[in-house]
Length: 535
Image 1: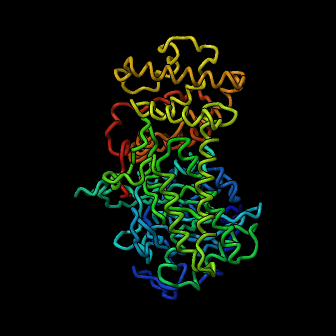
Image 2: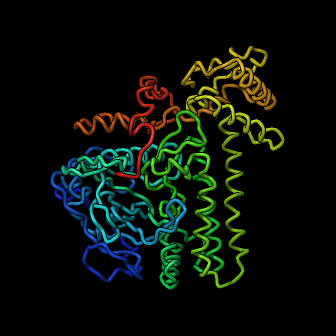
Image 3: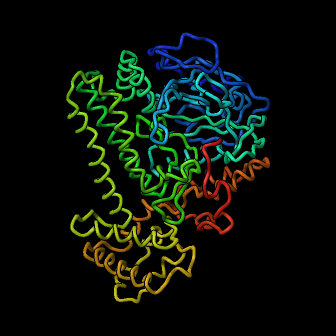
């Protein structure tokens, strides 16, 4: 870094726009973009950029030292007011199925890619501003984002990474100094909110919808160009593109997607809007909109008010929605296979189901402290547990974390004594009826018997369970508290949560309050229970 060029360490090699077809129209106005993977577009300047927070780990792997991230140039650049040397900004074209229906062209309506950085390890990272203004794909929107959604995206991107979940990352969160009009719940009550921009970082932001749009339009030449580029750039280990490699590639997408969904189910994360345009080709969690964390365990819960009636994207439905979305991607890729036989593609799609089933079993065994999943006993053990968890309001995160404290030598204890380590997980103590105690007690004895049969020392088992059952997650009310303070110009809670969530599996004695279950005031409050797609 030099004193007057703090972003000089960023080494750009923008192969996406160099190797793929561009929109020939240079002007930035809303339109259908044909035969092109992207449109050149400049971010919209803002009035008073102010850095709210940055993730030093992300800056480090990009090659930026901490002192570069607190400069005026950093804030100006990652608010969209200037482009650093090597940046060449653009928005990509894609389509997608939204809530199960084909929506046609969508595209980067409020996301603008700044370019691709190649770091000191030879890794390629795309930098993308979310909320940086209008693009040809903005449709009827303004291309901007507000502080509340930007805080949620910034914090959750990093929280997910530290939980061990495949995800896009977040470099920075910058206030724009401008206001943005939003009708948060589409109920006719718009208001001005502070604007903000998040810089998102990923090896690629390519989505299922990037391929779907060209297949839907019958533009198979550009479809093949994009597929071949993606394989050569992001999946080079598969070999030179060919119909056989396309199948191998699709299988890998299915496996990666299954791995991601298993992780979501492990920690109680609900994406909220699993449209095909929000599905990453790399199996990354992407587009943190109306997401939420399960607090009381409920397979039918969705955080998205837009999804409240059909609950298509509810927690328990995420595995099947991912499968459906992969089927839509298969339809888009089929024309490239040079065959009328769909069997190989169907076999590749079935890889998802197998990978998810195996991954889910391993995940549940790990959460329960079992050395491996026993097909003869553990299906029933897990099914009964999930039924019990849903029968009364039970905090998922606390329940599994406290389950590690059970004593395997305590099998003969009464129901209440057995369940006493778990009592902090219950929201409404009056729901713990004698019938519930008896049912949970029976399950706990079966579970302790299963553990006893494995003979693993309690200390070892607890250590293993604590490594997969987090103590700290980005609870919806915690994010809202950070938003409330940030909207008043106080960013300390954002920084505090960012640091807390860097160590989600560790005991942090001075942070016990952040591990508590949702307070009553947050039960129905906007931002703490459900959110809309508006941001």
